[in-house]
Image 1 (spheres, helix red, strand yellow):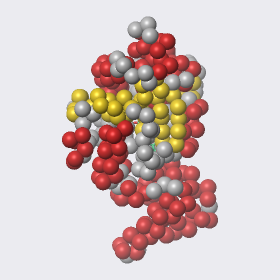
Image 2: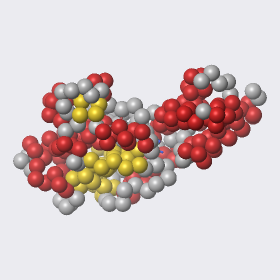
Image 3: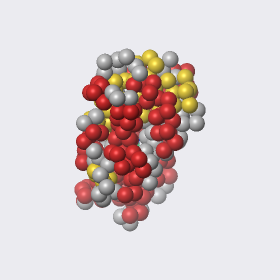
Image 4: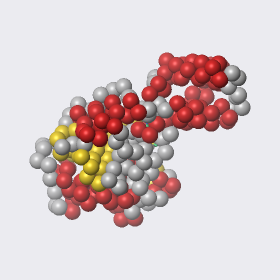
Length: 272
Ligand SMILES: C[S@@+](CC[C@H](N)C(=O)[O-])C[C@H]1O[C@@H](n2cnc3c(N)ncnc32)[C@H](O)[C@@H]1O
């Protein structure tokens, strides 16, 4: 197909995805979207974007694998365990020591809840080690994602063996059942609330936040969308609050002036 016609067909397909499934593809990096849609096109033996759009009409079951491919919701408990080690050492104690009556931690782009439960485990362990389990009632981990299927899995909190390859044994034993799939303990479950939220369209949770984790998510967004999101994160964090981007992403452009770096390696920042 001619390149211009292919571009027009791609634009028509992404508009269709936004219109019919509320996935606003316009702020995602083009190359990334084309690759992900290409995976589904090859799986269905379809050669061009227009034909794939027609296939979605003919076979609506294709929407589910397509949205799965677009949202890339792979995660793990304690993914990149050195990031969690850095959080446990410096960030969790600092947040826990904040005098606020309510502590709010946001796992933004939480996939199936792995990051949210992992953060909850760090706080639970810290509080109980200090003999302050009774103060856990002031903590809430708000976990959000755009993908409904992921959120349903997150609510179930049952994880297969492969989700634990980064998990320290002691934390796994303490907070997850030994079964397969392994179920998250009630201690953590009560600390986490899941909700659907599109990071590109919806405002952050309204309460002041002390910690935002947004890892392996913004990499799919174009630069203006990343900038706008970081500005919203800055506004949502209370002064002194932390932002962790993890090992893949970092702050771009003007957003760098909004935060100070606390840990370069693990991309942990703080709102001054
Ligand atoms: C690779 S997972 C990252 C999960 C977890 N943060 C981690 O690091 O393991 C990316 C997640 O971002 C979510 N996502 C993509 N676009 C989003 C958007 N516009 N709003 C909210 N979540 C989004 C996807 O659904 C997916 O679950």
